Image (cartoon, rainbow, N blue to C red; front, side, top):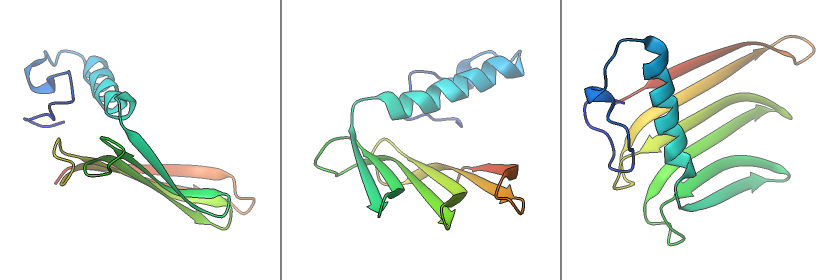
Length: 119
């Protein structure tokens, strides 16, 4: 999560011992889960029956974003998911996770490529 964490995150990755990769990964996953599980207001943006975007705001006034997740489809099949995590002010993107799916001729997922970036 970098040298400075959002004030919403209760774990300080920079000061935790880095002895076991699994412990560090678990802590990062816990932090991302905390970002989504805190109080806030979720907005679902749909086209027909499909949800295209989920925006989690800090409150129902929709002034500060916490996360924005965008789903891209080819027909009815998911082709990618992009999740952007915002800073404590809800203005700047501090991390982006992108999952891109490769499908076979029968539309089964044969590969998922995940890329995490931090500006």
